Image (cartoon, rainbow, N blue to C red; front, side, top):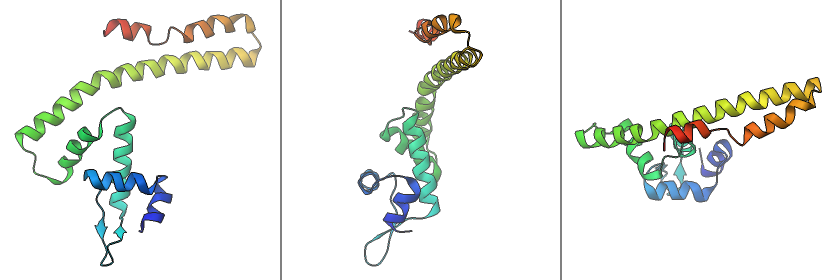
Length: 140
């Protein structure tokens, strides 16, 4: 697919694709006229990049992780990716706890609002300010 079609399907911009190409993390094939030719595998790779970015992983680290898809896994590469995973695993767990707590409180707020028990609402709103406190203090 051409760049325009890829951008539409991936909900991205040409600038982002050029940047990723420059970094070597998403390098499409080139047609004889030197236009970029993206594949469904490139679309999948783009989604991997976006998901890892959303998780807070840097583009440099993403490049290391993507290398595992196509290159033989060397000891150094394996160790680097393991370090990335281990470093981020604790953050993922904290984020999961944060969003679990947030979801519980907002579900309670929805129930309170639907049942018109406004006297409980102030307490729930106060709890929103304390979401994540236990995870922040447990993992300084």
